[in-house]
Amino acid sequence: LLVVIAIIGILASVVLASLNDARSSGADAAIQQSLGNARSQAEIVYNNNGAFSYDAVCADTQIIQLVNAAADGTGDTYVADQAPTQALAGCRDSATAWMITAPISDNVDGGTTAHWCIDSAGSVGRETSVGTGTVCP
Image (tube, rainbow, N blue to C red; front, top):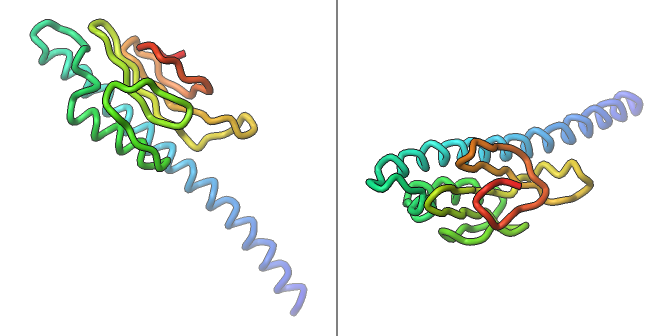
């Protein structure tokens, strides 16, 4: 009976460890989806702007909601047109380009904070450093 209980305990610990990984991966997927939707909205803002400019991307209400949704997964907040930092989601725009980043929990580099980054040039991916310009590093 003790052997059976020990085996069940070992199996339960393996399942719980896998559950935490799945939860983390799910949160990262939600962040990536929110920023993917922000990319589509940024192009709508560009097309609706008579001057065909990205200047208003970070001030757009829907972009702010999408980036807040991404940031909420990590407990951070977002302020329109702020410089991204290692801890916060951020959006930067200019007349010709924009970039949005949000922290993800994918810390595969031994604890380095990772970010999901998208920009108007079509770059999308995981970054370990966050630039302050309008393109992903």
